[in-house]
Image (cartoon, rainbow, N blue to C red; front, side):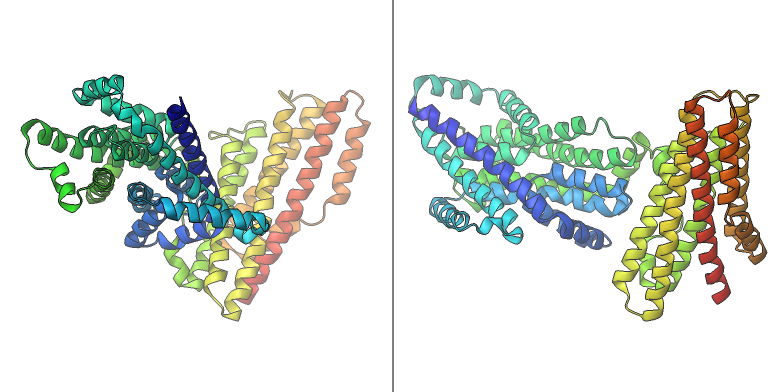
Length: 535
């Protein structure tokens, strides 16, 4: 009984360690890690190296994949720039597997002792050390768990029932392969399953052949796990997830047949290669895991363009992703700040094309093919990306004249984002009222307001596209202070007896948002006019 309790307790410590390492390292690497990715992914080789580093830090290629998906869908980086990082993150996960094959008992005990002392003196309460100590504690618990598993599992190989099971398993490599697949789907980590397999090989519970098959099965299980986790994704997000699936499949498709030929024909292959490097079974299995990741990464990199072409056909960008992608700004333009600012200005002017189309959804004869929510969310996303781009210009330059112009452009961008959100709120308010009869007093007031909104936004679109001074002056006149007129409209609304409370509230909210839209347009127009006069 004690033997099974040791194994059970060891597994518990192992999984707690895995969670502590992953969670704390993600927190530790949060903000600067994302900045590192943004900077490093501009170069393919550096992106691959960052992938290896991030895989070693997080010990989860799945985590790197979904971090990359988040950054791409947020518009921080392009798909092509993060793909090398996603591919090579798998190689980084080999670090812990290789460590698990080494006898580190004394080092682990020292690590746990030092961590315990740090916790006793409340060093963990310091923000700069909290997550680091959590990760170190996780590492210590992980290896302590492995030691318990080893000591508990040692007597198992002398039991008759266990020997019979191992004899059966040795004759069925398909079973060992499926065990690797299923355990990885449950554990969500091929590295975790591979470490347990290495531990079992270390105490003689699994043969070297069985363990290699389990490791290869774990890689396929990891691919299936990512595919299952990405079922709710569409477009670009799914492209990145499927690239990670492709990495896993490539390794299995190449390594598994080679090992099968080695087993059946007794020809030198993978096992012979790793035993040239070490005589230790556990280390040999860890090297097989590393070899599997390297082969996967190298071959996927070689055929990356073809694989991505196939993936794009299977999961093309969604309409929202296409609309949310900036047309003019791009990372390489940051090297030329003046040109970069011109690109931001063109991007901002383009966003005014969205605004009349958003209002079309609540006009009497308007037709909004893409829907106001999709249009407003896409426009807001591009505006936020412009904001990130302007921040990067500030970070990369110190010239006073450039900094002043960037600050002015940031002011315009903040106003533009507020304007997009105000127009979206206006449309949302009208739509919340439900079906509106055009011949009713309520309908006539509301649709007249909508036509005015659409006209002014169309004028604004024309004015900012060509930046003609007369058009800008006309727009400024249109958006001059309308508070008195809006107040008069509100009083007229309150005097209409056959309009219910809900309709009164809708008209009051819509006139308030109309007034806010005009105010934001006037502020934006003033800033553009000032910039035009200085040119």
